Structure formats: C-alpha cells, structure tokens
Amino acid sequence: MQIPLFPLNVVLFPEGELKLRIFEPRYIDMVSDCLRNDTGFGVCLIQEDKDMSKSADFFSMGTYAKIIDWSQMEDGLLGIVIKG
Image 1 (cartoon, rainbow, N blue to C red):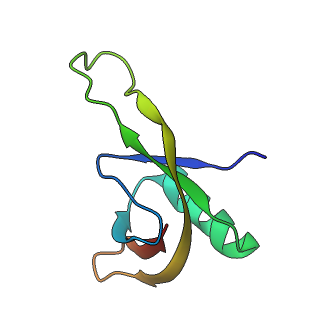
Image 2 (image 1 turned 45 degrees about the vertical axis):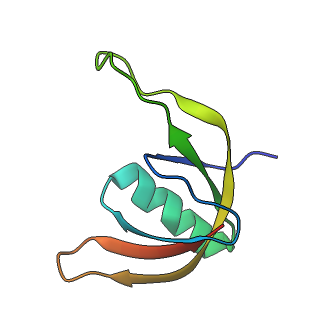
C-alpha cells in the first residue's frame, strides 16, 4: 500500500487533530486527491537538518491522517483540519 506523505515540523498523534494552511501546489494537489478519493495521507516528523543544501530527512514512523474539514481561506489558501 502506498500513501502520500506530508512531512511537518510537528507530531500528529493518533486521534489528535491539527489545523493546516496549504499553499504549496504539490500539497494542494495531494489534498484534492485525498478529498476526491476519500483517502488520507501520512504525516511524518521532519528531522532537524543543519545542512540546508539538501532536502530534509524525516522519521520513518508517522501517523495516518484523514481530512475532517476544509475551507478556502480569506487569503486564498486552503485550510484543512486533519485527524490522526
């Protein structure tokens, strides 16, 4: 089974909720796909990376999240609420 990943600098625990503002096109596409197909995505914690010349690494364990609410925000960004 493959699921899309959303690396963040916060931890989402099972049954926990988190509000996110989505602005990057790749994540807007991911969220749209998840809403369209009624699927979720993985949330994983980004490891601190002192070397900014490479992409960030993330921990191999995370939480499966489902979108429980969404709205178009006044600033044009997509706002979602996810639950682990």
